[in-house]
Image (cartoon, rainbow, N blue to C red):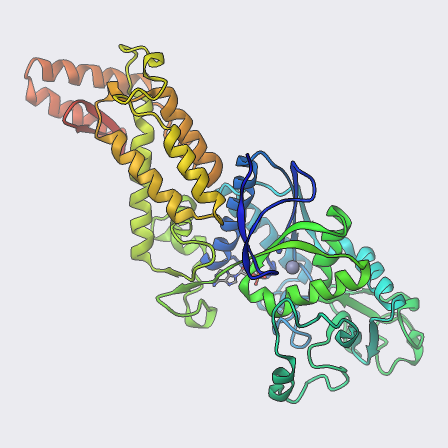
Length: 498
Ligand code: AMP
Ligand code: ZN
């Protein structure tokens, strides 16, 4: 039976998860802005939502997910002023915004493979959905939710009375504290741009014609906004618009789950809800999940502090994406994570210990028929209880730290047994389940050793039986050069990877 509980930002409570259709879940994940390499905090977000997808599948749901690639319109301030992050990145790298987008999208996709992230059914670029975004602006305009200023078309939040509800915003306080608006034409400081006009006299790498019917006073008369061919106003979508558009186009007007980082709650997701629900008249997303931010040594991750570590930085220090994945899963997605290289090294050790257990499956002999160890006979380790406990932990709001301790306990019980007392099929099933739900690739990273190495193992056993310790040590060294470490336990001699 499926019985997941998820913390829903919408209700501020741990809710029973029941999707609209019994076996299928629609899910939208706010994706990266592709103007730079992702840092460890960004990766944490995608690992958590990947784990959500895996746990949904573990519960038997079919998942249809959209993840967007923000390649236009995300301004430096997250609001409606400042430069577009892509255009800024383009100047920094001496390229066009299109080249920047392609370069960092490719890097993201490569990273997704390294982290073993399940590919979303739809990975879509904002720039591939311009007509659809304009259509959404049109619907909002027709329904009376928009107004035009000299620099764009805005959403009038006063027309959407529930605007403050999702993020529990105190708009009065926000108004009192508002700095003198850069954009004094806005009716409310928190109104947001649906479509921005290219600045007068400027050209952007990424800009599109604003359809005439979206403009109040047909192009020509709009003050100072003509930037393309005579009378044509060029423009680009506001950041929030893409997510509403792509979610509703690809998954329907109401989706089951929408995910993002906590930074998205007060602006980005608040605005997504306003524009989507104003346009469709129905609820946009039923469960909103937000992951907390990762800090570094207790402080914010920021380029200017020089701590925006990317995978390249981690690799320079000998860490892999799987080490970071283990590190990320050690914290609950709602708790504020803290990154340090020491904690990352500890996570790497934990992963190494788990891989050592995974190696045991190649070493359990068939002297005792594996079938006799089935059925939870107490003298043989059977994984069913561990799998059940893991499911319970993950179904309880994706409690990954708890799932990890359950695995630690089982693995420690497994490693303390003679090989003969391990039910091999069960061990493989446990490893497969861990890989399925946590994506740690324990099976793939621990293939069986080759025949040459196996021959050396046989020779070493023979040397030991003959008490030929010199030869046995020689063989141990030889195996070490092949990356294989021999270890004597209370019962057996086992091998692991170096
Ligand atoms: P961006 O590319 O800036 O749109 O951010 C991509 C994702 O990373 C968003 O979901 C953010 O919420 C998330 N994010 C940004 N900084 C952090 C952080 N320090 N820890 C965790 N997630 C973060
Ligand atoms: Zn979004």
